[in-house]
Length: 402
Image 1 (cartoon, rainbow, N blue to C red):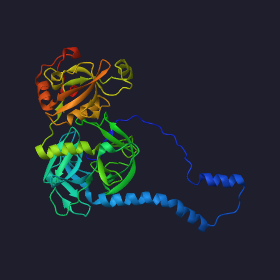
Image 2 (cartoon, rainbow, N blue to C red):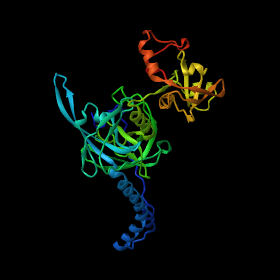
Image 3 (cartoon, one colour):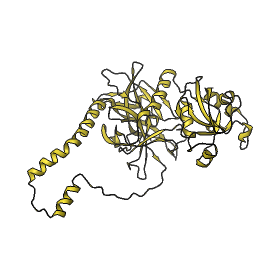
């Protein structure tokens, strides 16, 4: 579907907590002291105006952000041919969102691939904020991150400003703009609830590379492809999925970080496809606190190598089984999936510093990353075998190798 798909989640029962407001203290005090003189309505309104001023400043910020971003957000409608289980096909209308960006002097609409997947260019309608309707001249896509780039040509287009998703922190205020349930240019706000959500069941094995920002800004079906905005009016994410038992907003939404989006988009625009790098190691997904302590680490961070591919960048750099990758090209590595993402977005052929923990000490090793396509081609042509022994440096299917 073009609308935000449901992901598999565990049902969580919430408890209600009543928080005291700004006026709770004074009211309780008046009751306890036995004061009985009623305040006039004029006095109450005056007090309310004074207290509301600080909140009005927040409201003014939101209004300014919306005025800046509104013209850059688009509503997308598609007509797709859908196969019936009983045979035959039917035309299905679906909707989503997108945001206009200027890249290399040209204008593009960034959205999710699942918003436009299966639709011909002539059946993709982009509605601008001023009411104009466009059809994209081309559509580029990367299924592995669920990103699509639609080229558009029109006068007086307004492009959004791109922020730095690496700089956002948990607790930052953000806004989501899009077309929930087809209601274009709807605005909701919330905070960044978490970062680095990387192992979500999106109902499709196509989306291999995940590094989602989690937010409680209301996101619903139809918000797919719309921007997540910070209080500087900058795009920091592309809204993609929700965790829901009902199909609607339950306060858990996920956005692709804009830094990842831009790296993918630039490759698509420049090369027509995404070329990913690889290191040539197999990682231990069960690596945890006990193993980290044994290896001399204070906490379980980094990615533990338990296999190395023959003739790979990792072998050439003399990385070893048992090494824990702590930093890759200056980025502190959190876990195995994080390392996969960071490596894949590195320029193929580039030499980068890799910090590893080995035998209680840290070493910096220069590694020149390879082309993942070559690894995948080798995996496809390699004879099928039983479970691989990491000590034998066997080649496994591409999904297991980084």
